[in-house]
Amino acid sequence: MRRTRLLSIILLTAALAPGLWWRAPEPPRDFQRSVTIRPLAITPERRGPFTLSAAWELTGDRLEFGGFSALVARDDRRFLAGSDTGRRLQFERPDRSAQPGVLARFADEEASAKVGRDLESLAVDPASGTVWGGYEYRKSIVRFDARFNPDAEVRPAGMRDWEDNAGAETLVRLADGRFLVVEERARRGRGRHHALVFATDPVKDRDPARAIVGIPAGYRPVDGTPIDGGQALVLLRRVVWGIPPGFESAIAHVNIDRRNPDGSIAARLVTEFGDAIPQENYEGLALTRDHDGTHLWLISDDNFMSTQRTLLLKLRWDQREKARE
Image (cartoon, rainbow, N blue to C red; front, side):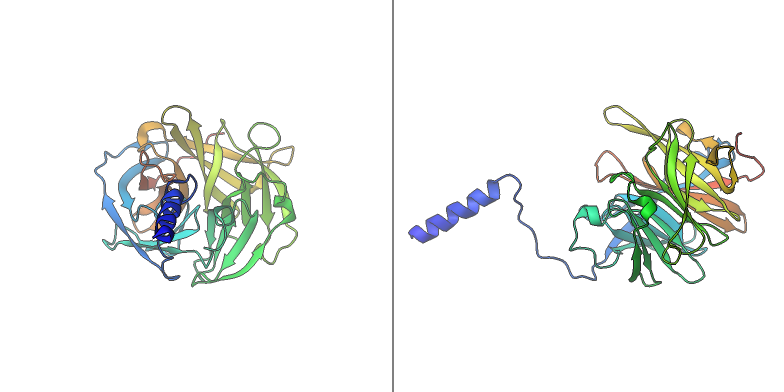
Protein backbone atom coordinates (compact mmCIF):
# COMPACT_ATOMS: atom_id res chain seq x y z
CA MET A 1 0.00 0.00 0.00
CA ARG A 2 2.77 2.44 0.89
CA ARG A 3 4.46 1.73 -2.44
CA THR A 4 1.19 2.38 -4.27
CA ARG A 5 0.69 5.72 -2.47
CA LEU A 6 4.28 6.72 -3.14
CA LEU A 7 3.92 5.91 -6.84
CA SER A 8 0.69 7.92 -7.02
CA ILE A 9 2.37 10.93 -5.40
CA ILE A 10 5.28 10.75 -7.83
CA LEU A 11 2.97 10.54 -10.85
CA LEU A 12 0.82 13.46 -9.65
CA THR A 13 3.89 15.60 -8.92
CA ALA A 14 5.32 14.86 -12.37
CA ALA A 15 2.03 15.77 -14.03
CA LEU A 16 1.88 19.15 -12.27
CA ALA A 17 5.57 20.03 -12.53
CA PRO A 18 6.31 22.85 -15.01
CA GLY A 19 8.21 21.84 -18.11
CA LEU A 20 7.12 18.17 -17.96
CA TRP A 21 4.57 16.85 -20.43
CA TRP A 22 2.93 13.49 -20.95
CA ARG A 23 3.47 12.51 -24.54
CA ALA A 24 1.55 10.05 -26.68
CA PRO A 25 3.58 7.30 -28.34
CA GLU A 26 5.54 8.46 -31.39
CA PRO A 27 3.49 8.11 -34.59
CA PRO A 28 4.77 5.82 -37.33
CA ARG A 29 7.73 7.28 -39.18
CA ASP A 30 5.78 7.38 -42.43
CA PHE A 31 2.95 9.35 -40.82
CA GLN A 32 0.69 11.41 -43.07
CA ARG A 33 -2.01 13.92 -42.26
CA SER A 34 -4.81 15.12 -44.52
CA VAL A 35 -5.10 18.86 -45.10
CA THR A 36 -8.39 20.54 -45.99
CA ILE A 37 -8.31 23.25 -48.66
CA ARG A 38 -11.39 25.46 -48.55
CA PRO A 39 -12.11 28.29 -51.04
CA LEU A 40 -12.72 31.76 -49.64
CA ALA A 41 -15.05 34.42 -50.99
CA ILE A 42 -12.91 37.34 -52.17
CA THR A 43 -13.34 40.59 -54.05
CA PRO A 44 -10.79 40.79 -56.88
CA GLU A 45 -8.35 43.57 -56.10
CA ARG A 46 -5.56 44.96 -58.27
CA ARG A 47 -2.38 46.43 -56.87
CA GLY A 48 0.35 47.30 -59.36
CA PRO A 49 0.59 44.49 -61.95
CA PHE A 50 -1.02 41.89 -59.66
CA THR A 51 -4.72 41.08 -59.34
CA LEU A 52 -6.01 38.84 -56.58
CA SER A 53 -8.16 36.25 -58.35
CA ALA A 54 -8.70 33.46 -55.79
CA ALA A 55 -7.95 32.48 -52.20
CA TRP A 56 -8.16 29.36 -50.05
CA GLU A 57 -7.77 28.57 -46.35
CA LEU A 58 -5.77 25.45 -45.41
CA THR A 59 -6.41 23.61 -42.17
CA GLY A 60 -5.03 20.42 -40.68
CA ASP A 61 -3.88 18.59 -37.56
CA ARG A 62 -3.65 21.17 -34.78
CA LEU A 63 -0.30 19.88 -33.51
CA GLU A 64 1.46 19.16 -36.80
CA PHE A 65 0.00 21.64 -39.28
CA GLY A 66 1.21 25.19 -39.82
CA GLY A 67 4.33 27.33 -39.97
CA PHE A 68 4.72 27.24 -43.76
CA SER A 69 7.68 29.34 -44.84
CA ALA A 70 8.37 28.13 -48.40
CA LEU A 71 6.44 27.26 -51.56
CA VAL A 72 7.46 25.86 -54.97
CA ALA A 73 5.57 24.60 -58.01
CA ARG A 74 6.75 21.05 -58.76
CA ASP A 75 5.02 21.21 -62.16
CA ASP A 76 1.98 22.93 -63.65
CA ARG A 77 -0.45 21.14 -61.32
CA ARG A 78 1.32 20.33 -58.03
CA PHE A 79 2.73 22.45 -55.21
CA LEU A 80 5.14 21.66 -52.42
CA ALA A 81 5.27 23.74 -49.24
CA GLY A 82 7.77 23.45 -46.40
CA SER A 83 7.38 24.41 -42.76
CA ASP A 84 9.76 25.65 -40.10
CA THR A 85 9.16 22.41 -38.16
CA GLY A 86 10.49 20.25 -40.99
CA ARG A 87 7.13 19.29 -42.49
CA ARG A 88 6.27 19.09 -46.17
CA LEU A 89 2.84 19.65 -47.65
CA GLN A 90 2.04 18.33 -51.11
CA PHE A 91 -1.17 19.44 -52.77
CA GLU A 92 -2.69 19.81 -56.20
CA ARG A 93 -3.63 23.22 -57.49
CA PRO A 94 -6.95 24.00 -55.82
CA ASP A 95 -8.15 25.91 -58.89
CA ARG A 96 -7.97 22.60 -60.80
CA SER A 97 -8.59 19.95 -58.15
CA ALA A 98 -10.69 19.38 -55.04
CA GLN A 99 -8.26 16.84 -53.57
CA PRO A 100 -7.03 17.44 -50.00
CA GLY A 101 -3.36 18.08 -49.34
CA VAL A 102 -1.05 15.59 -47.64
CA LEU A 103 1.21 16.62 -44.76
CA ALA A 104 4.29 14.48 -44.11
CA ARG A 105 7.83 14.75 -42.81
CA PHE A 106 10.79 16.11 -44.70
CA ALA A 107 13.12 13.13 -44.32
CA ASP A 108 13.67 11.46 -40.95
CA GLU A 109 14.48 14.57 -38.95
CA GLU A 110 12.44 13.87 -35.83
CA ALA A 111 15.46 13.07 -33.65
CA SER A 112 16.78 16.61 -33.96
CA ALA A 113 15.49 19.65 -32.11
CA LYS A 114 13.47 22.31 -33.91
CA VAL A 115 16.63 24.32 -34.46
CA GLY A 116 17.82 21.48 -36.67
CA ARG A 117 14.54 21.22 -38.58
CA ASP A 118 13.92 24.91 -39.21
CA LEU A 119 13.31 24.77 -42.97
CA GLU A 120 12.86 28.29 -44.34
CA SER A 121 13.18 28.01 -48.12
CA LEU A 122 12.81 25.61 -51.03
CA ALA A 123 14.06 25.39 -54.61
CA VAL A 124 13.16 22.78 -57.20
CA ASP A 125 14.27 21.39 -60.54
CA PRO A 126 10.93 20.49 -62.16
CA ALA A 127 12.64 18.30 -64.77
CA SER A 128 14.27 15.90 -62.30
CA GLY A 129 12.11 16.51 -59.23
CA THR A 130 15.21 17.34 -57.16
CA VAL A 131 14.47 19.68 -54.24
CA TRP A 132 16.82 21.85 -52.19
CA GLY A 133 15.94 23.14 -48.72
CA GLY A 134 17.49 26.09 -46.88
CA TYR A 135 17.82 25.51 -43.12
CA GLU A 136 18.06 28.55 -40.91
CA TYR A 137 19.80 27.48 -37.70
CA ARG A 138 21.92 24.80 -39.36
CA LYS A 139 23.07 27.41 -41.91
CA SER A 140 22.98 24.74 -44.53
CA ILE A 141 21.38 23.65 -47.79
CA VAL A 142 20.07 20.08 -48.06
CA ARG A 143 19.44 18.37 -51.38
CA PHE A 144 16.57 15.86 -51.62
CA ASP A 145 15.82 13.45 -54.44
CA ALA A 146 12.41 13.29 -56.11
CA ARG A 147 11.11 11.07 -53.26
CA PHE A 148 12.33 13.55 -50.64
CA ASN A 149 15.22 11.43 -49.44
CA PRO A 150 18.18 13.63 -48.44
CA ASP A 151 21.28 12.81 -50.48
CA ALA A 152 23.65 15.67 -49.58
CA GLU A 153 24.05 18.63 -47.24
CA VAL A 154 26.43 21.59 -47.50
CA ARG A 155 27.27 24.34 -45.04
CA PRO A 156 28.75 27.12 -47.18
CA ALA A 157 31.50 29.14 -45.55
CA GLY A 158 29.75 32.31 -46.70
CA MET A 159 26.75 31.48 -44.48
CA ARG A 160 28.65 30.74 -41.27
CA ASP A 161 28.37 34.26 -39.84
CA TRP A 162 24.71 34.69 -40.77
CA GLU A 163 22.51 35.14 -37.72
CA ASP A 164 21.01 31.98 -36.25
CA ASN A 165 17.44 33.18 -36.62
CA ALA A 166 17.83 34.94 -39.96
CA GLY A 167 19.57 32.47 -42.25
CA ALA A 168 18.70 31.10 -45.71
CA GLU A 169 15.24 32.61 -45.82
CA THR A 170 15.27 32.90 -49.62
CA LEU A 171 16.60 30.16 -51.90
CA VAL A 172 15.94 30.28 -55.64
CA ARG A 173 17.03 27.97 -58.44
CA LEU A 174 17.15 30.46 -61.28
CA ALA A 175 15.96 29.61 -64.79
CA ASP A 176 19.55 29.40 -66.07
CA GLY A 177 20.58 26.85 -63.41
CA ARG A 178 22.29 29.23 -60.99
CA PHE A 179 21.16 29.54 -57.38
CA LEU A 180 20.59 32.61 -55.22
CA VAL A 181 20.35 32.42 -51.43
CA VAL A 182 19.65 35.54 -49.35
CA GLU A 183 19.88 36.12 -45.60
CA GLU A 184 16.68 37.44 -44.03
CA ARG A 185 18.12 40.11 -41.77
CA ALA A 186 20.25 43.05 -42.90
CA ARG A 187 23.72 42.95 -41.39
CA ARG A 188 25.69 45.92 -42.71
CA GLY A 189 23.73 49.03 -43.34
CA ARG A 190 20.00 49.41 -43.65
CA GLY A 191 18.47 47.15 -46.28
CA ARG A 192 21.75 45.44 -47.21
CA HIS A 193 21.43 41.66 -47.00
CA HIS A 194 24.18 39.10 -47.42
CA ALA A 195 23.71 36.67 -50.30
CA LEU A 196 25.47 33.89 -52.18
CA VAL A 197 25.29 33.15 -55.91
CA PHE A 198 26.05 29.55 -56.90
CA ALA A 199 27.06 28.82 -60.49
CA THR A 200 25.28 25.46 -60.27
CA ASP A 201 23.89 23.03 -57.68
CA PRO A 202 25.10 24.26 -54.24
CA VAL A 203 26.24 20.72 -53.44
CA LYS A 204 28.65 20.88 -56.39
CA ASP A 205 29.70 24.54 -56.28
CA ARG A 206 31.86 24.83 -53.16
CA ASP A 207 33.02 28.38 -53.95
CA PRO A 208 29.93 30.56 -54.52
CA ALA A 209 30.23 34.27 -55.16
CA ARG A 210 29.34 36.53 -52.26
CA ALA A 211 26.98 39.42 -52.86
CA ILE A 212 24.86 42.07 -51.17
CA VAL A 213 21.18 42.44 -52.08
CA GLY A 214 19.59 45.80 -51.39
CA ILE A 215 16.04 45.36 -50.04
CA PRO A 216 13.78 48.45 -50.07
CA ALA A 217 11.69 50.26 -47.50
CA GLY A 218 12.49 48.34 -44.35
CA TYR A 219 11.22 45.01 -45.68
CA ARG A 220 12.89 41.62 -45.27
CA PRO A 221 13.13 38.99 -48.02
CA VAL A 222 11.19 35.82 -47.09
CA ASP A 223 11.01 33.79 -50.33
CA GLY A 224 11.65 33.98 -54.06
CA THR A 225 10.68 32.38 -57.36
CA PRO A 226 12.55 32.30 -60.70
CA ILE A 227 11.35 34.04 -63.83
CA ASP A 228 13.84 34.33 -66.72
CA GLY A 229 17.64 33.94 -66.91
CA GLY A 230 19.21 35.33 -63.75
CA GLN A 231 16.02 37.06 -62.65
CA ALA A 232 13.65 36.33 -59.78
CA LEU A 233 10.72 37.79 -57.94
CA VAL A 234 11.25 38.13 -54.20
CA LEU A 235 8.51 38.17 -51.59
CA LEU A 236 9.06 40.86 -48.97
CA ARG A 237 7.53 41.16 -45.51
CA ARG A 238 7.41 43.93 -42.94
CA VAL A 239 6.09 43.49 -39.39
CA VAL A 240 3.68 46.12 -38.06
CA TRP A 241 4.05 45.94 -34.29
CA GLY A 242 0.86 45.90 -32.27
CA ILE A 243 -1.41 43.56 -30.31
CA PRO A 244 -1.60 41.31 -32.21
CA PRO A 245 1.20 42.25 -34.66
CA GLY A 246 0.31 42.75 -38.31
CA PHE A 247 2.17 42.20 -41.54
CA GLU A 248 2.69 44.07 -44.80
CA SER A 249 3.74 42.25 -47.97
CA ALA A 250 5.38 43.35 -51.20
CA ILE A 251 7.04 41.94 -54.33
CA ALA A 252 10.46 42.99 -55.65
CA HIS A 253 12.36 42.11 -58.82
CA VAL A 254 16.00 40.94 -58.73
CA ASN A 255 18.42 40.50 -61.62
CA ILE A 256 21.71 39.06 -60.36
CA ASP A 257 23.49 40.19 -63.53
CA ARG A 258 22.53 43.84 -63.02
CA ARG A 259 24.71 45.46 -60.36
CA ASN A 260 24.86 48.86 -58.74
CA PRO A 261 28.11 50.85 -58.96
CA ASP A 262 29.17 49.43 -55.57
CA GLY A 263 28.62 45.88 -56.84
CA SER A 264 25.43 45.22 -54.88
CA ILE A 265 22.29 43.75 -56.42
CA ALA A 266 19.17 45.91 -56.24
CA ALA A 267 15.80 44.39 -55.40
CA ARG A 268 13.50 46.80 -57.23
CA LEU A 269 10.06 47.20 -55.74
CA VAL A 270 7.27 45.99 -58.04
CA THR A 271 4.32 46.54 -55.73
CA GLU A 272 3.23 46.86 -52.12
CA PHE A 273 0.00 44.96 -51.55
CA GLY A 274 -1.41 46.90 -48.61
CA ASP A 275 -5.05 45.89 -48.06
CA ALA A 276 -5.42 44.47 -51.59
CA ILE A 277 -4.85 40.99 -50.13
CA PRO A 278 -5.99 39.44 -46.82
CA GLN A 279 -3.56 40.51 -44.10
CA GLU A 280 -1.49 37.49 -43.05
CA ASN A 281 2.17 36.55 -42.62
CA TYR A 282 3.01 35.50 -46.20
CA GLU A 283 6.34 33.66 -46.41
CA GLY A 284 6.05 31.40 -49.48
CA LEU A 285 6.04 32.39 -53.18
CA ALA A 286 5.67 30.35 -56.38
CA LEU A 287 4.90 31.07 -60.02
CA THR A 288 2.94 29.20 -62.68
CA ARG A 289 2.72 29.93 -66.39
CA ASP A 290 -0.75 28.94 -67.54
CA HIS A 291 -2.73 29.05 -70.76
CA ASP A 292 -4.66 32.05 -69.40
CA GLY A 293 -1.63 33.97 -68.13
CA THR A 294 1.09 33.99 -65.49
CA HIS A 295 0.15 33.68 -61.83
CA LEU A 296 1.86 34.20 -58.49
CA TRP A 297 0.93 32.05 -55.51
CA LEU A 298 1.46 33.11 -51.88
CA ILE A 299 1.18 30.94 -48.79
CA SER A 300 1.11 32.32 -45.25
CA ASP A 301 2.83 31.18 -42.06
CA ASP A 302 0.38 31.07 -39.15
CA ASN A 303 3.21 30.83 -36.58
CA PHE A 304 1.07 28.13 -34.91
CA MET A 305 -1.09 30.92 -33.46
CA SER A 306 -4.89 30.81 -33.24
CA THR A 307 -5.09 34.45 -34.34
CA GLN A 308 -3.43 33.71 -37.70
CA ARG A 309 -4.41 31.60 -40.71
CA THR A 310 -2.74 29.53 -43.39
CA LEU A 311 -3.94 31.11 -46.63
CA LEU A 312 -3.09 30.37 -50.25
CA LEU A 313 -3.55 33.22 -52.72
CA LYS A 314 -3.59 33.21 -56.51
CA LEU A 315 -2.70 36.50 -58.23
CA ARG A 316 -2.69 37.18 -61.96
CA TRP A 317 0.48 39.01 -63.10
CA ASP A 318 0.24 41.61 -65.85
CA GLN A 319 3.86 41.55 -67.05
CA ARG A 320 3.48 44.68 -69.13
CA GLU A 321 3.93 46.77 -65.98
CA LYS A 322 7.58 47.18 -64.97
CA ALA A 323 9.23 47.43 -61.58
CA ARG A 324 9.64 50.83 -60.00
CA GLU A 325 13.06 52.37 -60.36
